[in-house]
Each structure stands twice: as C-alpha cells, then as structure tokens.
Image (cartoon, rainbow, N blue to C red):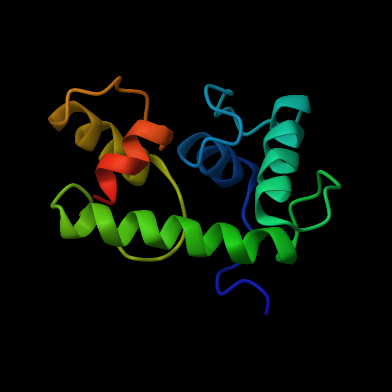
Length: 121
C-alpha cells in the first residue's frame, strides 16, 4: 500500500527524520544533501524496507503511520492541535517540544527513547 498523502517534499522528510530520531539535529533547510540521505537510510533500516536513501512510497507509508501515532498521542495529551494528517511539520515538531518541556526533558523536538517512553506510558 502506498502513501495516503502526496509525496513528501524535502523539508517534510527533514521534519520526519528529526522528530522520529533517524537523523536528529540534522538541518531542516529543504536542501536534499547527505544529511537527508543519511536520515532516510536510517529510517529505512528501522522500517525494514530496502535501504537505498530514496524516500519513495515504501518508506513514506510506514513513516506516515509513525507520524500519525505521534500526532494522535500528542493530541490526546493536549499538545498537538493540528490536523491528524500523517504529515510532519513545524506544528508537530513544536508539540513534541512542548511535551518535552512539560515533562522536564531535553527540549529538542526529537522523539528519542525517554520522550517515547513518557509519551506512551
């Protein structure tokens, strides 16, 4: 099954790889360079899809599922007020930061191990 949304642009991919901890701290600059490719490959490895550095349908589908799970949980907790659209961006990034602030975590917008544990506990 392919993605339920349009193919993601580079900036959207960069929000995904930061929020989902596939290349945390990489720039969100809409430039498709080696940092973006590395994040895509890390995500592909995590999803168990072919690791080719190309963000196509087989990578976007599980990425959408992961983003949607974060949107839903952050909305339940009152931190995310956007659409449940499976598309990462500045609003979800900020919601993660607001959640982290509320729990006394490092505020970086990245759903790492500690943030994930507290988010889903």
